[in-house]
Image (cartoon, rainbow, N blue to C red):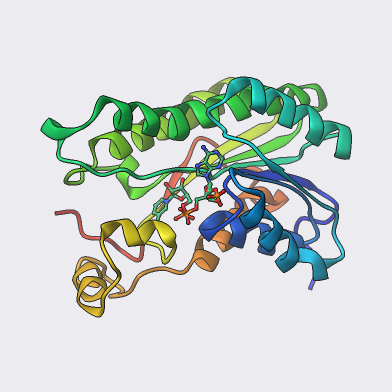
Length: 252
Ligand SMILES: NC(=O)c1ccc[n+]([C@@H]2O[C@H](COP(=O)([O-])OP(=O)(O)OC[C@H]3O[C@@H](n4cnc5c(N)ncnc54)[C@H](OP(=O)(O)O)[C@@H]3O)[C@@H](O)[C@H]2O)c1
């Protein structure tokens, strides 16, 4: 089968674990070279090991996406390595639940910094090179929390609504430069983030599954499949969309 991302250069944040790691693995299999970011070299090196058999070029870089100066340096490094960035996946994100009245300012602020200012920082520096070439794909990993309310998630929920808004606005501003900007809104996905709901006991998994039409938690690979489509030429006509990929979650 033809490689759908042959010789494209993809920049993926939060690629040390979970959804970001799986997107990296799939993109490499589809023929892309990779520039991978996370906060820790330890997790990045494991992702690099997983993609090493693909024969594609892989660079890893540890940086906090909320640190604007560090992001500027990181994007420079990516452009030095590859000369261009064709695909940006803003995937890095954190989840710190709390009832609203007890929210610590520091926790609310941190969620905004990583989940909103992170994509703002990375996208602004990466877009400069895409605009020059009149071509590019930006994929934001938002959430069902960017579409509706959820208990004790006011920071996360606000941040993902903001990311959906940023996706729409950027799509509008970037359309004339032939740059597509879309978001994926996953439901519950089997990653480390899930453990923040509590230890993933069979009872917890069953309780979550009750709220999902397909009666199961999704796998990171299923999110990666949609990311491949949005990164490929097949989706050239799509922009400004925030696509639910949630197994049919029931809003309660
Ligand atoms: N899992 C779900 O159910 C679910 C549902 C909807 C949406 N999402 C969204 O999907 C994305 C990925 O989630 P996940 O479940 O795969 O998360 P995860 O397993 O917790 O992995 C998060 C990744 O992001 C990196 N990261 C965290 N903070 C960062 C920062 N400040 N700068 C750079 N990298 C940072 C982590 O780095 P280290 O490896 O160095 O720790 C890690 O590689 C997030 O945006 C999340 O909100 C997840």
